[in-house]
Amino acid sequence: MNKIKNLSQFMSPRDLEYHVNISVKNSYIYFEVPKAGCSTIKGILQEIEATTLGLPIPEKTREVIHNKKISPLLSPKDIGKDKFLEMLEDKQVFKFSFVRNPYTRILSAYLSKMRWQEGREKKEIADTLGILTKEKISFDQFLDAIKQTTSYNMNPHWRIQTDQLFWSLIDYNFIGHLENFNQDFQKVIDNISPDYNLQTQNYSRKTGSEIKLKNFYNSENINLVKNIYQQDFQTFNYSLELPEE
Image (cartoon, rainbow, N blue to C red; front, side, top):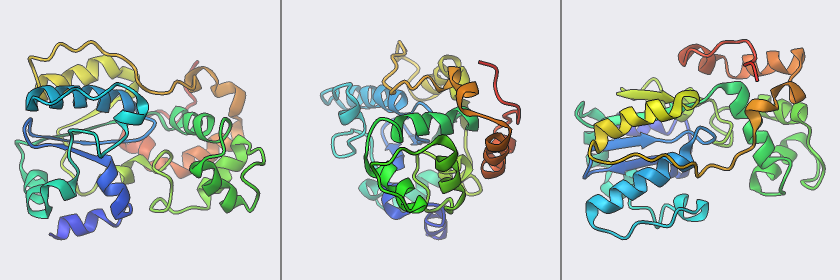
């Protein structure tokens, strides 16, 4: 049980239950990274799982995709600690995730959570900055608030990806990159459900962060992102240079 206990060093038990998606039937565990294609990935995985189990296929809406009570994919509590630990240690269980360039991921999080709504995520940042939720939050203010927060206490949408993935504890079979999604996700399908005819449909909320980088980044905040997400750049082989649009 020590490994399961150690997982809780990286995030709250509630986050752990939400972001770990398990298929006992198809023998895999998907550890999700928010803002790295997780809506699309879960939408497809849920369809495969429901089909395999003979269940109705869940609706492909964001509200349904992210509702764990509806999802045919299981959480650690659903299968129990012993079974979860067994699957974590079993090399035949396919363990995978997808990551994203920190520059585009963090800007996408800002665009989707800070500028268009006054939700829970914006309140977290506003509270850290000591301002009202209704006030406008700049990208630099957003990054400054993140810098003041430990990775454990960060919102999963901008938590350091190596921590979100319990990188030092999980022996992954495959890590895909959002920038190469179609090719990489086909490799996942080939492992978990080779008979499935993958026709990728994007269920993620598009922010267009990839083409807006130069509108938000400058030399100062580039260095800030490098500093906060140093582990992600190094671990997942992303260049420290700002991507070309």
